[in-house]
Picture 1 (spheres, rainbow, N blue to C red):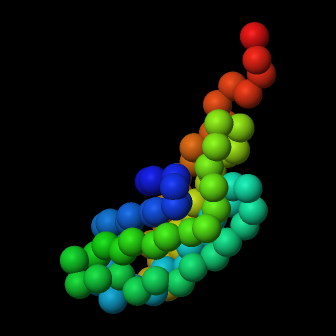
Picture 2 (picture 1 turned 90 degrees about the horizontal axis):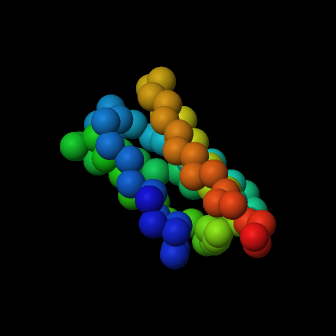
Length: 79
């Protein structure tokens, strides 16, 4: 996962599977991607991750595959 722009790479899905991605961060965005013959995909989002922004991405495949990634917020309180 890269955060500028938010780039998600997935692997281990069924070849040819259609995957719906739901990303939440400083907003909410969805993407639909087709999985490659190798079982992978890449998707970019306009969301921005920052020091005080949690990022969560969920993937839902039409053949039953599921995956998620969660990058919690870092401590945003100044000492």
